[in-house]
Length: 112
Length: 371
Image (cartoon, rainbow over the protein chains, first blue to last red):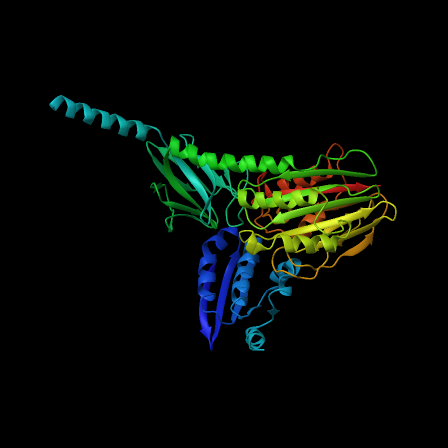
């Protein structure tokens, strides 16, 4: 599991890859939260290279979204595979964090 | 004065000997910062693999059935790879022959790591005390589970098999009133005593059948109230998923709501399909003031309702394939086996398919036979 955080014209981009399981979330969560929340700006999260999300992975995304929301910033997820969309739909995570198909959609969503 | 100095030296030497001789080599399977399991390595050595007959069984699709062997030679640990598919690594270096595993080094197999620790018995016992606390927590959760129901128009059987690191599963059922029967299953995100304690707090609310200002016969209201009571920011970042249903024996109507949880399933006696029961609601505690919905289904005669946690199907089979719920449903539709309860039959099927009787997450499964 790895994370790459970059900047796209005033938007934070976090690209996750691998399995977001219990063990990897323990290692990754601090980097994820510390990489996006202090910036306090709209954030898009690339899930295209994520193969699995456990409940703690959902919690990590939720924590980030809620912390950004308190700073009037938005998080949008994109690039989820069918398997990841199944998990997102089972948990109804998309009712809290918008999920869109691609990066351009994500940038448009946070700009709206 | 000289005699005193000599005595002190001897005493120190004996202390060192005592400490040294009292130490145990252990391999500690970690999950992030948590130690999930400890395995003492004795002169017999330990085989690590994905399934029996390995001594240390780790459910990971990248671990071979017999992956590597760790032996104690003198006072050192050595590891040999057993022609595993993905290799064995010591501190990131692939093992190509018998390789020393120094104290403090990290053994990597598949996606999992085991650290070599050399602990005194006191240290080990302190660590074991933490494990015993988890066992006590699991025992407490188990004590709160309802007894199986062998009589009456609604019979219930279950299997609850907590994982080594203890998840946050719990469930309950019983009469809400003369005509209504309630059933629920809760799965707190995370592991350890914290998740288990949270599950206990939730189930204690539900067992009393008395959430504030809430009609317990209306699942959407129950989930809504739980969502306000258990917001994750007020509960150490913990949220949970739930399935909650109320069956009316007069109308055979089952009202239900799931919050972030996969479906429960109804299977008819013909066993020609499983009817999923799910509503699209968010996890409980994820966000305040969320709307919740419920749905209703008529339960056919002599049907079976299966309610379970994701630990039942989020497993890796002995071929290294990661399961989804569909893989589990195939087994659910198999015919019952004489002498085995439905939950036990399914537990045995999952054990057989995974080659393991221990899992990464709690295995909780309740089956209701409804006349």
